Image (cartoon, rainbow over all chains, first blue to last red; front, top):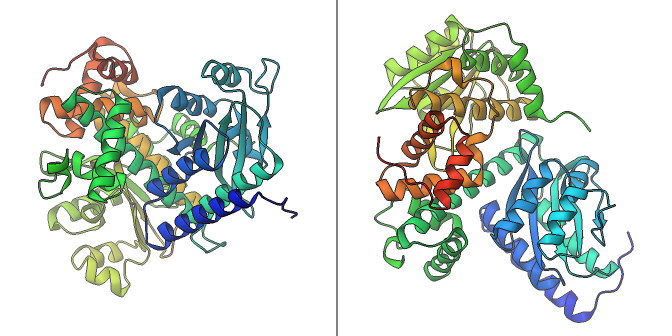
Amino acid sequence: MTIPALEKADAVRLASTLIEITSLVTHGGETIDIFTNLAQRCVELLPVAAAGILLRDASGRLQVIGASSPSAHLLDLFQVQNDEGPCLECSNTGEPVSDEDLSANGPWPRFSKQARLSGFGSTYAVPLRSRDLTAGALNLFAKGRLSEGQLVIAQALADSATLTLLQVDPAADLHIVIRRIHVAVECRNTIEQAQGMIAQRFSLDVEEAYIRLRDVSHEAQMSLYEVARAVVTRDPHSPVSTLL
Amino acid sequence: MTEPRWLKFSRQLEDSRLGTTTAERICHVAASLVGGTGASISLFVDNAYLALAESGPLAVMLDETQFQLGDGPVFEAQNSAVPLIVEDISGTAARTQFPAFGPIAERSNVGSVAAFPIGVGTAQLGTLNVYRKSAGPLSGEEYANGLIAASFALSEAIDYQAGIAESVSSGELPKRFESSHLQVAAGMVAEALQCSIVESLVLIRARAFSDSVSVVEIARAIENRTLVLDPQ
Protein backbone atom coordinates (compact mmCIF):
# COMPACT_ATOMS: atom_id res chain seq x y z
CA MET A 1 0.00 0.00 0.00
CA THR A 2 1.36 3.43 -0.94
CA ILE A 3 0.73 6.16 1.55
CA PRO A 4 0.68 9.72 0.21
CA ALA A 5 2.84 12.12 2.17
CA LEU A 6 0.93 13.89 4.90
CA GLU A 7 1.35 17.52 5.90
CA LYS A 8 3.58 17.61 8.95
CA ALA A 9 0.92 19.13 11.20
CA ASP A 10 -1.60 16.49 10.07
CA ALA A 11 0.88 13.70 10.72
CA VAL A 12 1.62 14.96 14.22
CA ARG A 13 -2.05 15.26 15.11
CA LEU A 14 -2.81 11.82 13.66
CA ALA A 15 0.04 10.30 15.63
CA SER A 16 -1.13 11.86 18.88
CA THR A 17 -4.68 10.61 18.28
CA LEU A 18 -3.45 7.07 17.58
CA ILE A 19 -1.34 7.18 20.74
CA GLU A 20 -4.36 8.27 22.72
CA ILE A 21 -6.56 5.50 21.27
CA THR A 22 -3.90 2.83 21.87
CA SER A 23 -3.54 3.97 25.43
CA LEU A 24 -7.32 3.82 26.00
CA VAL A 25 -7.39 0.27 24.64
CA THR A 26 -4.47 -0.99 26.70
CA HIS A 27 -6.00 0.57 29.81
CA GLY A 28 -9.16 -1.44 29.24
CA GLY A 29 -11.48 1.40 28.19
CA GLU A 30 -15.04 0.59 27.15
CA THR A 31 -15.50 0.28 23.39
CA ILE A 32 -18.29 2.89 23.44
CA ASP A 33 -16.02 5.47 25.10
CA ILE A 34 -13.13 4.78 22.73
CA PHE A 35 -15.37 5.01 19.66
CA THR A 36 -17.07 8.21 20.83
CA ASN A 37 -13.62 9.68 21.32
CA LEU A 38 -12.55 8.54 17.86
CA ALA A 39 -15.59 10.11 16.20
CA GLN A 40 -14.83 13.42 17.89
CA ARG A 41 -11.19 13.24 16.80
CA CYS A 42 -12.28 12.74 13.16
CA VAL A 43 -13.99 16.12 13.24
CA GLU A 44 -10.86 17.73 14.70
CA LEU A 45 -8.36 16.04 12.37
CA LEU A 46 -10.28 16.25 9.11
CA PRO A 47 -12.32 18.95 7.36
CA VAL A 48 -15.54 17.10 8.14
CA ALA A 49 -18.62 18.42 9.92
CA ALA A 50 -19.73 15.13 11.46
CA ALA A 51 -18.52 11.57 11.94
CA GLY A 52 -19.94 8.35 13.25
CA ILE A 53 -18.91 4.74 13.65
CA LEU A 54 -21.48 2.09 12.78
CA LEU A 55 -21.03 -1.55 13.70
CA ARG A 56 -22.94 -4.59 12.53
CA ASP A 57 -24.45 -6.31 15.57
CA ALA A 58 -25.19 -10.01 16.04
CA SER A 59 -28.52 -9.66 14.26
CA GLY A 60 -26.89 -8.08 11.20
CA ARG A 61 -28.21 -4.57 11.76
CA LEU A 62 -26.03 -1.46 11.84
CA GLN A 63 -25.77 0.21 15.24
CA VAL A 64 -24.28 3.64 15.94
CA ILE A 65 -21.39 3.23 18.36
CA GLY A 66 -19.86 6.65 18.72
CA ALA A 67 -20.86 9.85 16.98
CA SER A 68 -19.17 13.25 16.92
CA SER A 69 -22.42 14.78 18.14
CA PRO A 70 -25.66 13.28 19.43
CA SER A 71 -27.77 15.58 17.26
CA ALA A 72 -31.05 14.16 16.04
CA HIS A 73 -30.41 14.83 12.34
CA LEU A 74 -27.13 12.94 12.50
CA LEU A 75 -28.68 9.98 14.29
CA ASP A 76 -31.48 9.88 11.71
CA LEU A 77 -28.88 9.82 8.96
CA PHE A 78 -27.29 6.80 10.57
CA GLN A 79 -30.64 5.18 11.21
CA VAL A 80 -31.73 5.33 7.57
CA GLN A 81 -28.65 3.31 6.67
CA ASN A 82 -30.23 0.05 7.71
CA ASP A 83 -32.02 0.42 4.34
CA GLU A 84 -29.55 2.30 2.13
CA GLY A 85 -26.44 4.45 2.36
CA PRO A 86 -22.65 4.47 2.33
CA CYS A 87 -22.18 2.61 5.63
CA LEU A 88 -24.50 -0.20 4.61
CA GLU A 89 -22.70 -0.60 1.29
CA CYS A 90 -19.24 -0.26 2.82
CA SER A 91 -20.01 -2.81 5.56
CA ASN A 92 -21.35 -5.24 2.97
CA THR A 93 -18.47 -4.97 0.53
CA GLY A 94 -15.59 -4.11 2.88
CA GLU A 95 -14.52 -1.38 0.43
CA PRO A 96 -14.51 2.40 0.93
CA VAL A 97 -17.34 4.27 -0.79
CA SER A 98 -18.20 7.92 -1.27
CA ASP A 99 -20.76 10.25 -2.75
CA GLU A 100 -19.04 13.55 -3.38
CA ASP A 101 -22.00 15.64 -4.48
CA LEU A 102 -24.98 13.91 -2.88
CA SER A 103 -27.04 14.45 -6.01
CA ALA A 104 -30.50 12.99 -6.39
CA ASN A 105 -29.15 10.67 -9.11
CA GLY A 106 -26.56 9.16 -6.76
CA PRO A 107 -26.52 5.61 -5.46
CA TRP A 108 -28.59 6.36 -2.32
CA PRO A 109 -31.37 8.86 -3.18
CA ARG A 110 -33.21 8.71 0.15
CA PHE A 111 -30.06 8.96 2.19
CA SER A 112 -28.52 11.78 0.15
CA LYS A 113 -31.69 13.86 0.27
CA GLN A 114 -31.64 13.70 4.06
CA ALA A 115 -27.91 14.45 4.15
CA ARG A 116 -28.37 17.50 1.90
CA LEU A 117 -31.22 18.76 4.08
CA SER A 118 -28.85 18.48 7.06
CA GLY A 119 -26.43 20.83 5.28
CA PHE A 120 -23.83 18.31 4.10
CA GLY A 121 -22.24 18.30 0.62
CA SER A 122 -20.41 14.97 0.55
CA THR A 123 -20.16 11.72 2.44
CA TYR A 124 -17.51 9.03 2.82
CA ALA A 125 -17.49 5.60 4.43
CA VAL A 126 -14.32 3.64 5.16
CA PRO A 127 -14.46 0.04 6.40
CA LEU A 128 -13.57 -1.34 9.82
CA ARG A 129 -11.98 -4.38 8.29
CA SER A 130 -9.51 -7.11 9.12
CA ARG A 131 -8.97 -10.02 6.77
CA ASP A 132 -12.41 -11.41 5.84
CA LEU A 133 -14.25 -9.68 8.64
CA THR A 134 -15.89 -6.30 8.08
CA ALA A 135 -17.25 -5.21 11.45
CA GLY A 136 -18.75 -1.91 10.27
CA ALA A 137 -17.75 1.45 8.84
CA LEU A 138 -16.62 4.95 9.73
CA ASN A 139 -18.96 7.50 8.15
CA LEU A 140 -17.85 11.07 7.47
CA PHE A 141 -19.93 14.05 6.38
CA ALA A 142 -18.29 17.12 4.88
CA LYS A 143 -19.25 20.35 3.12
CA GLY A 144 -16.60 19.89 0.40
CA ARG A 145 -14.36 17.07 -0.80
CA LEU A 146 -11.59 15.23 1.02
CA SER A 147 -8.11 14.81 -0.46
CA GLU A 148 -6.42 11.44 -0.93
CA GLY A 149 -4.21 12.12 2.11
CA GLN A 150 -7.22 12.95 4.22
CA LEU A 151 -8.83 9.66 3.24
CA VAL A 152 -5.67 7.88 4.36
CA ILE A 153 -6.07 9.54 7.75
CA ALA A 154 -9.71 8.42 7.83
CA GLN A 155 -8.68 4.84 7.07
CA ALA A 156 -5.99 4.96 9.77
CA LEU A 157 -8.62 6.04 12.29
CA ALA A 158 -10.97 3.29 11.10
CA ASP A 159 -8.12 0.77 11.43
CA SER A 160 -7.50 1.83 15.01
CA ALA A 161 -11.22 1.24 15.66
CA THR A 162 -10.93 -2.24 14.14
CA LEU A 163 -7.93 -3.01 16.34
CA THR A 164 -9.97 -1.92 19.34
CA LEU A 165 -12.48 -4.63 18.50
CA LEU A 166 -9.89 -7.30 17.77
CA GLN A 167 -7.53 -6.18 20.54
CA VAL A 168 -4.27 -7.18 18.87
CA ASP A 169 -5.41 -10.68 17.97
CA PRO A 170 -6.07 -10.65 14.19
CA ALA A 171 -7.53 -14.13 14.46
CA ALA A 172 -9.94 -13.05 17.20
CA ASP A 173 -12.91 -15.35 16.99
CA LEU A 174 -16.10 -13.96 15.44
CA HIS A 175 -17.85 -14.46 18.75
CA ILE A 176 -15.37 -12.26 20.61
CA VAL A 177 -15.98 -9.41 18.15
CA ILE A 178 -19.74 -9.96 18.34
CA ARG A 179 -19.58 -9.88 22.14
CA ARG A 180 -17.62 -6.60 22.12
CA ILE A 181 -20.16 -5.05 19.74
CA HIS A 182 -23.02 -6.36 21.89
CA VAL A 183 -21.51 -4.85 25.04
CA ALA A 184 -20.93 -1.55 23.23
CA VAL A 185 -24.58 -1.45 22.11
CA GLU A 186 -25.77 -2.10 25.67
CA CYS A 187 -23.44 0.64 26.96
CA ARG A 188 -24.94 3.03 24.43
CA ASN A 189 -28.46 2.00 25.51
CA THR A 190 -27.48 2.75 29.11
CA ILE A 191 -26.15 6.19 28.12
CA GLU A 192 -29.45 6.91 26.33
CA GLN A 193 -31.46 5.81 29.37
CA ALA A 194 -29.35 8.18 31.50
CA GLN A 195 -29.92 11.00 28.96
CA GLY A 196 -33.66 10.49 29.43
CA MET A 197 -33.37 10.65 33.22
CA ILE A 198 -31.25 13.82 33.13
CA ALA A 199 -33.50 15.43 30.50
CA GLN A 200 -36.48 14.84 32.77
CA ARG A 201 -34.73 15.95 35.97
CA PHE A 202 -33.45 19.27 34.63
CA SER A 203 -36.01 19.93 31.86
CA LEU A 204 -33.38 19.62 29.13
CA ASP A 205 -33.58 18.27 25.61
CA VAL A 206 -31.78 15.05 24.80
CA GLU A 207 -28.70 16.71 23.34
CA GLU A 208 -28.35 19.07 26.31
CA ALA A 209 -28.66 16.06 28.61
CA TYR A 210 -25.81 14.38 26.74
CA ILE A 211 -23.61 17.46 27.14
CA ARG A 212 -24.45 17.55 30.86
CA LEU A 213 -23.39 13.90 31.22
CA ARG A 214 -20.19 14.56 29.26
CA ASP A 215 -19.33 17.55 31.45
CA VAL A 216 -19.81 15.44 34.58
CA SER A 217 -17.64 12.71 33.08
CA HIS A 218 -14.81 15.26 32.57
CA GLU A 219 -15.26 16.68 36.05
CA ALA A 220 -15.39 13.30 37.79
CA GLN A 221 -12.70 11.87 35.47
CA MET A 222 -14.95 8.94 34.78
CA SER A 223 -15.96 7.55 31.39
CA LEU A 224 -19.29 8.60 29.91
CA TYR A 225 -20.55 5.05 30.36
CA GLU A 226 -19.57 4.92 34.04
CA VAL A 227 -21.38 8.21 34.64
CA ALA A 228 -24.48 6.94 32.80
CA ARG A 229 -24.47 3.71 34.76
CA ALA A 230 -24.27 5.59 38.06
CA VAL A 231 -27.23 7.74 36.98
CA VAL A 232 -29.41 4.85 35.84
CA THR A 233 -28.67 2.63 38.84
CA ARG A 234 -29.12 5.66 41.15
CA ASP A 235 -25.82 4.81 42.82
CA PRO A 236 -25.72 6.90 46.02
CA HIS A 237 -21.97 6.31 46.52
CA SER A 238 -20.89 7.57 43.12
CA PRO A 239 -19.36 11.07 42.90
CA VAL A 240 -21.81 11.60 40.04
CA SER A 241 -24.69 12.05 42.51
CA THR A 242 -23.09 15.20 43.96
CA LEU A 243 -21.80 16.60 40.66
CA LEU A 244 -25.11 16.59 38.82
CA MET B 1 -25.51 -9.85 0.15
CA THR B 2 -26.27 -12.66 2.55
CA GLU B 3 -29.51 -12.58 4.50
CA PRO B 4 -29.12 -10.75 7.83
CA ARG B 5 -29.15 -13.14 10.78
CA TRP B 6 -32.22 -11.65 12.40
CA LEU B 7 -34.28 -12.17 9.20
CA LYS B 8 -33.23 -15.79 9.04
CA PHE B 9 -34.16 -16.23 12.70
CA SER B 10 -37.49 -14.47 12.12
CA ARG B 11 -38.28 -16.71 9.15
CA GLN B 12 -37.51 -19.86 11.13
CA LEU B 13 -39.71 -18.55 13.91
CA GLU B 14 -42.62 -18.14 11.51
CA ASP B 15 -42.07 -21.54 9.94
CA SER B 16 -41.60 -23.39 13.21
CA ARG B 17 -44.28 -25.97 13.86
CA LEU B 18 -42.96 -26.65 17.33
CA GLY B 19 -44.39 -24.78 20.29
CA THR B 20 -47.78 -23.16 20.77
CA THR B 21 -46.75 -19.70 21.97
CA THR B 22 -44.24 -17.29 20.41
CA ALA B 23 -42.05 -17.68 23.48
CA GLU B 24 -42.05 -21.47 23.05
CA ARG B 25 -41.24 -21.15 19.36
CA ILE B 26 -38.32 -18.85 20.25
CA CYS B 27 -37.03 -21.63 22.54
CA HIS B 28 -37.28 -24.25 19.79
CA VAL B 29 -35.54 -22.09 17.18
CA ALA B 30 -32.89 -21.04 19.73
CA ALA B 31 -32.19 -24.69 20.62
CA SER B 32 -31.78 -25.53 16.96
CA LEU B 33 -29.60 -22.52 15.99
CA VAL B 34 -27.44 -22.53 19.12
CA GLY B 35 -26.76 -26.27 18.97
CA GLY B 36 -28.84 -27.21 21.99
CA THR B 37 -31.01 -30.16 22.98
CA GLY B 38 -33.28 -27.80 24.89
CA ALA B 39 -33.82 -24.11 25.58
CA SER B 40 -35.87 -21.95 27.90
CA ILE B 41 -36.76 -18.36 28.75
CA SER B 42 -36.59 -17.60 32.45
CA LEU B 43 -37.70 -14.29 33.93
CA PHE B 44 -36.99 -12.51 37.19
CA VAL B 45 -40.26 -10.86 38.27
CA ASP B 46 -41.03 -9.39 41.71
CA ASN B 47 -37.93 -10.98 43.20
CA ALA B 48 -38.84 -14.46 42.00
CA TYR B 49 -37.78 -16.61 39.08
CA LEU B 50 -40.29 -18.12 36.70
CA ALA B 51 -40.11 -19.94 33.41
CA LEU B 52 -41.90 -18.09 30.60
CA ALA B 53 -41.38 -20.91 28.11
CA GLU B 54 -39.43 -24.10 27.57
CA SER B 55 -38.77 -26.29 24.54
CA GLY B 56 -39.46 -29.57 26.34
CA PRO B 57 -39.19 -31.70 29.49
CA LEU B 58 -35.36 -31.50 29.70
CA ALA B 59 -35.43 -27.69 29.79
CA VAL B 60 -38.33 -27.71 32.28
CA MET B 61 -36.39 -30.01 34.60
CA LEU B 62 -33.13 -28.04 34.35
CA ASP B 63 -34.90 -24.70 34.91
CA GLU B 64 -36.81 -25.99 37.93
CA THR B 65 -33.65 -27.54 39.36
CA GLN B 66 -31.90 -24.17 39.21
CA PHE B 67 -34.85 -22.27 40.75
CA GLN B 68 -35.17 -24.81 43.58
CA LEU B 69 -31.46 -25.01 44.35
CA GLY B 70 -30.80 -21.31 43.85
CA ASP B 71 -27.73 -22.38 41.90
CA GLY B 72 -26.93 -22.35 38.18
CA PRO B 73 -26.02 -20.21 35.17
CA VAL B 74 -29.45 -18.48 35.26
CA PHE B 75 -28.45 -16.68 38.45
CA GLU B 76 -24.95 -15.87 37.26
CA ALA B 77 -26.12 -14.36 33.97
CA GLN B 78 -29.07 -12.46 35.45
CA ASN B 79 -27.16 -9.40 36.60
CA SER B 80 -24.88 -9.06 33.63
CA ALA B 81 -25.35 -7.77 30.12
CA VAL B 82 -22.83 -10.32 28.85
CA PRO B 83 -23.75 -13.90 27.92
CA LEU B 84 -22.47 -16.60 30.24
CA ILE B 85 -21.10 -19.66 28.45
CA VAL B 86 -20.30 -22.67 30.63
CA GLU B 87 -18.25 -24.65 28.13
CA ASP B 88 -17.82 -27.77 30.24
CA ILE B 89 -20.39 -28.38 32.95
CA SER B 90 -18.36 -31.30 34.35
CA GLY B 91 -15.10 -29.34 34.39
CA THR B 92 -13.36 -28.16 37.54
CA ALA B 93 -14.33 -24.52 37.12
CA ALA B 94 -18.02 -25.31 36.63
CA ARG B 95 -17.95 -27.75 39.59
CA THR B 96 -16.79 -24.94 41.86
CA GLN B 97 -19.13 -22.39 40.32
CA PHE B 98 -22.26 -24.57 40.33
CA PRO B 99 -21.75 -27.26 42.99
CA ALA B 100 -25.43 -28.23 43.18
CA PHE B 101 -26.64 -27.71 39.61
CA GLY B 102 -23.53 -29.03 37.80
CA PRO B 103 -23.82 -32.73 38.71
CA ILE B 104 -27.56 -32.81 37.94
CA ALA B 105 -27.01 -31.27 34.51
CA GLU B 106 -24.23 -33.76 33.86
CA ARG B 107 -26.47 -36.71 34.79
CA SER B 108 -29.02 -35.35 32.30
CA ASN B 109 -26.42 -35.63 29.52
CA VAL B 110 -25.83 -31.88 29.33
CA GLY B 111 -22.26 -30.98 28.42
CA SER B 112 -22.45 -27.19 28.24
CA VAL B 113 -24.88 -24.37 29.03
CA ALA B 114 -25.24 -20.91 27.51
CA ALA B 115 -27.28 -18.18 29.22
CA PHE B 116 -28.03 -15.02 27.20
CA PRO B 117 -29.28 -12.03 29.19
CA ILE B 118 -32.69 -10.65 28.22
CA GLY B 119 -32.57 -6.90 28.65
CA VAL B 120 -31.60 -3.53 27.28
CA GLY B 121 -28.90 -1.32 28.77
CA THR B 122 -29.03 -1.69 32.55
CA ALA B 123 -32.57 -3.09 32.47
CA GLN B 124 -32.40 -6.85 32.88
CA LEU B 125 -35.50 -9.07 32.77
CA GLY B 126 -34.18 -12.62 32.67
CA THR B 127 -32.18 -15.04 30.55
CA LEU B 128 -32.56 -17.21 27.50
CA ASN B 129 -30.92 -20.54 28.33
CA VAL B 130 -29.62 -23.15 25.93
CA TYR B 131 -28.72 -26.63 27.16
CA ARG B 132 -26.22 -28.38 24.90
CA LYS B 133 -25.32 -32.04 24.73
CA SER B 134 -21.60 -31.71 24.13
CA ALA B 135 -18.98 -29.70 25.98
CA GLY B 136 -17.07 -26.99 24.13
CA PRO B 137 -17.31 -23.40 23.00
CA LEU B 138 -20.06 -21.91 20.85
CA SER B 139 -19.25 -21.02 17.27
CA GLY B 140 -19.52 -17.35 16.29
CA GLU B 141 -22.79 -18.09 14.48
CA GLU B 142 -24.27 -19.89 17.49
CA TYR B 143 -23.24 -17.03 19.77
CA ALA B 144 -24.83 -14.46 17.44
CA ASN B 145 -28.03 -16.51 17.17
CA GLY B 146 -28.24 -16.76 20.97
CA LEU B 147 -28.12 -12.95 21.20
CA ILE B 148 -30.84 -12.67 18.55
CA ALA B 149 -33.02 -15.21 20.37
CA ALA B 150 -32.62 -13.14 23.55
CA SER B 151 -33.62 -9.97 21.70
CA PHE B 152 -36.80 -11.69 20.44
CA ALA B 153 -37.43 -12.94 23.97
CA LEU B 154 -37.18 -9.36 25.27
CA SER B 155 -40.45 -8.44 23.51
CA GLU B 156 -42.19 -11.47 24.99
CA ALA B 157 -40.82 -10.75 28.48
CA ILE B 158 -42.06 -7.16 28.43
CA ASP B 159 -45.46 -8.20 27.06
CA TYR B 160 -45.75 -10.78 29.83
CA GLN B 161 -45.03 -8.16 32.48
CA ALA B 162 -47.45 -5.71 30.83
CA GLY B 163 -50.16 -8.38 31.04
CA ILE B 164 -50.58 -8.54 27.27
CA ALA B 165 -51.89 -11.87 26.05
CA GLU B 166 -49.73 -13.98 23.79
CA SER B 167 -52.25 -14.02 20.94
CA VAL B 168 -51.84 -10.30 20.26
CA SER B 169 -48.12 -9.96 20.91
CA SER B 170 -46.78 -12.12 18.10
CA GLY B 171 -45.74 -10.98 14.68
CA GLU B 172 -44.27 -7.61 15.65
CA LEU B 173 -40.84 -6.53 14.62
CA PRO B 174 -37.94 -7.59 16.78
CA LYS B 175 -35.68 -4.89 18.17
CA ARG B 176 -38.66 -2.66 18.87
CA PHE B 177 -37.45 -2.21 22.45
CA GLU B 178 -33.97 -1.28 21.35
CA SER B 179 -34.52 2.06 19.61
CA SER B 180 -32.82 5.18 20.96
CA HIS B 181 -36.18 6.92 21.44
CA LEU B 182 -37.32 4.12 23.70
CA GLN B 183 -34.22 4.32 25.92
CA VAL B 184 -34.60 8.07 26.32
CA ALA B 185 -38.35 7.80 27.01
CA ALA B 186 -37.81 4.98 29.52
CA GLY B 187 -35.24 7.14 31.32
CA MET B 188 -37.67 10.07 31.42
CA VAL B 189 -40.49 7.93 32.81
CA ALA B 190 -38.17 6.30 35.36
CA GLU B 191 -37.09 9.73 36.60
CA ALA B 192 -40.61 11.19 36.67
CA LEU B 193 -42.16 8.23 38.49
CA GLN B 194 -39.01 7.22 40.42
CA CYS B 195 -39.37 3.68 39.13
CA SER B 196 -36.97 1.27 37.39
CA ILE B 197 -36.19 1.25 33.67
CA VAL B 198 -37.87 -2.16 33.39
CA GLU B 199 -41.06 -0.77 34.97
CA SER B 200 -40.90 2.20 32.58
CA LEU B 201 -40.59 -0.06 29.53
CA VAL B 202 -43.55 -2.11 30.75
CA LEU B 203 -45.63 1.07 31.25
CA ILE B 204 -44.72 2.30 27.75
CA ARG B 205 -45.65 -1.06 26.23
CA ALA B 206 -48.96 -1.16 28.12
CA ARG B 207 -49.82 2.35 26.91
CA ALA B 208 -48.89 1.50 23.31
CA PHE B 209 -51.12 -1.56 23.52
CA SER B 210 -54.13 0.30 24.89
CA ASP B 211 -53.71 3.10 22.29
CA SER B 212 -53.08 0.55 19.48
CA VAL B 213 -49.87 2.30 18.39
CA SER B 214 -46.22 1.22 18.33
CA VAL B 215 -43.98 1.60 21.37
CA VAL B 216 -41.74 3.93 19.37
CA GLU B 217 -44.69 6.30 18.76
CA ILE B 218 -45.38 6.43 22.51
CA ALA B 219 -41.66 6.92 23.15
CA ARG B 220 -41.46 9.87 20.72
CA ALA B 221 -44.49 11.51 22.34
CA ILE B 222 -42.86 11.18 25.77
CA GLU B 223 -39.57 12.54 24.42
CA ASN B 224 -41.40 15.52 22.85
CA ARG B 225 -43.22 16.03 26.15
CA THR B 226 -46.65 15.73 24.54
CA LEU B 227 -47.44 12.65 26.65
CA VAL B 228 -46.91 12.02 30.35
CA LEU B 229 -47.44 8.51 31.70
CA ASP B 230 -49.18 7.88 35.03
CA PRO B 231 -48.02 5.20 37.43
CA GLN B 232 -49.74 1.86 36.99
